[in-house]
Amino acid sequence: MEAMEETVDQSLREMRETFASGRTRSIKWRKAQLGAIIEMVKDNEEKMCDVLFQDLGKHSTEAFRDELGFVMRSASTALNFLDKWVVPKKSNLPLLFYPATGKVISEPYGTVLVLSSWNFPISLSLDPMIGAIAAGNTVLLKASELSPNASALLTKLIPSYLDTKAIKVIEGGPDVATILLQHQWDKIFFTGSPKIGKIIMAAAAEHLTPVTLELGGKCPTIIDHHSVSKDMKSVVKRISGGKWGSCSGQACISVDYVLVEQSFASTLIDMFKPVIRSFFGVNPKESGCLSKIVTKKHFQRLSRLLNDPRVKASIVYGGSMDEDKLYVEPTILLDPPLDSEIMNEEIFGPILPIITLRDIQESIGFIKSKPKPLAIYAFTKDENLKTRILSETSSGSVTFNDLMIQYMCDALPFGGVGQSGMGRYHGKYSFECFSHEKAIMEGSLAMDLEARYPPWNNFKLNFIRLAFREAYFKLLLLMLGLTKGVRK
Image (cartoon, rainbow, N blue to C red; front, side):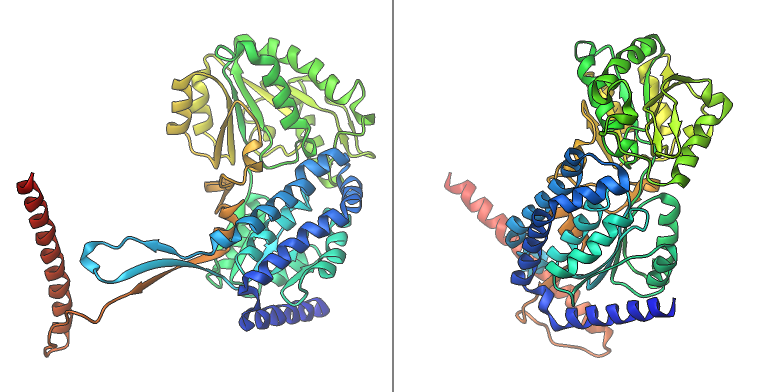
């Protein structure tokens, strides 16, 4: 531990010196690093796919879609738009302050700590780093110990492509994270569970460090079968892909449970079964395209959730498990007890509860009774239901008639609210996430009044001066308006 503490101290010292030198503020430097990230991913695509398969059993197609391709697009977006993002934003000041001018400039925070997650170990490490670099910060990445092969690869590759005095990677478990959090950072970005998010926030509070917390929650999916009856095949395919096709449900934006009217539940289940078989074959364990559960600890947690006798009785499809292969079959539950553990914590696995309601409008109240989720999904063409979802619920995002695509869209901010997180990033929002927006105002020395004693009279004079200006210019505008009216 002493050696690790020394390593962290030395890394922090070097990054702070680099930032103080002003090198990372250079647009040329930022673009060079962003370009190097793209080059790094392109050069090592096969290696990255290999480690993602070793750690999580991800098929190479899934790995490119959710991680490598996502990172390259994110870096390309930052590279292409950086010149526009850094331009100071002019502010239209009230007439009261004329002839003063105002603008807002984006400046880097300084030295940033990024704590990434294991479920998307490449993209959730490099994507926040892209935002931090674009904003001109120095960055230390703490990769997740639960995806050791991906972590080791990033630790090897990043120093080979990026500025080693400004961008660093460190491996290790909770003990290393504890050491890192004892130091003062200018910004902390964390992706993970709400439980660990509270620890991060408490540590950041010691130094009043700003944080962005990308957490999770139980993301619901509403199916209004009345309005989408003609498109139910597409609905079932999209839910199946979103639940089981992205890291086997081990994703913060994955569908956690489905809300549907009781009268349609059996039909929905019958529609899921052939779609699952078409996606993953008769024996999903041997399909090669279903990610494994990340560790035995996580497997045992899912096993415990499913082996609750009341939950086990609700299984209507799947349910088989293999601890040696860290495999959990795509599983569907029908109305598990609402007070069971599986309905009160994020599942983070290939288990899909279906909760039935008398009327789909009741889904609003059901969602409101739970902590605010990271995402709400709703398959509906009913504009009234859409309006109710938007106006009566709170969530990080809402997506209608599709799943998880909001995460891939750089034009929209991604982030949570309440227990599902705070802060936002992606695209320009990543640049803003790692920038401090500094207000700049430039006044005029004209129209001063003579100072008076005592000193507080000077403040009175300033207010008089401002009030006089405002009254004068309002009168001038009024006269111009009246004159214009007379000329007509």
